[in-house]
Image 1 (cartoon, helix red, strand yellow):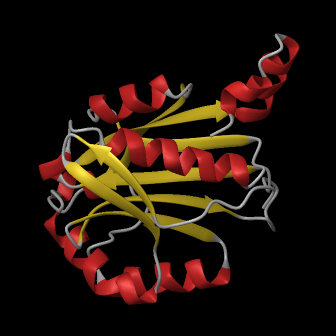
Image 2 (tube, rainbow, N blue to C red):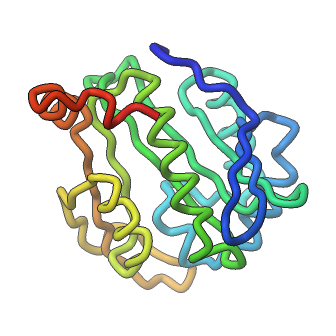
Length: 197
């Protein structure tokens, strides 16, 4: 990583004080409880069902392997959000990272998602990634607007891409952010500090 961010970090939101910290194996029970409390529909834009213990176990292994960095948003000792940066340095796209993010219903619309997405974005910048992607169901209007405000643009629509527990299919939208291009444009205009956090 070109810049190492330090945690925990504390942020004031309309939901109160939120602590951001890196997820570890010790957080698994709290993250599982968080996943189980999410509406089922919210789980659809994550590649795997994080309310399943075996999925959580594999997730922790990926964190320990260094392929995934997950930030937890914690309020009063309870996980209320998770922002994850996934990258595969051994793939054909080592310069690309994927952001996965979800926040609990009780803190939505109170700035937690915005702060978490900004912090996850800063992690991606620190990792030297050139491009980011994020995906969600097309009806997640608030989440789409949030990422568009960070400079993400719609790149693909995947029709009937996920199937919920009732067997109904849903479309997924993929948003992308070309960090390298934006940084180059800012430097051309003499604004290199604009994307620093």
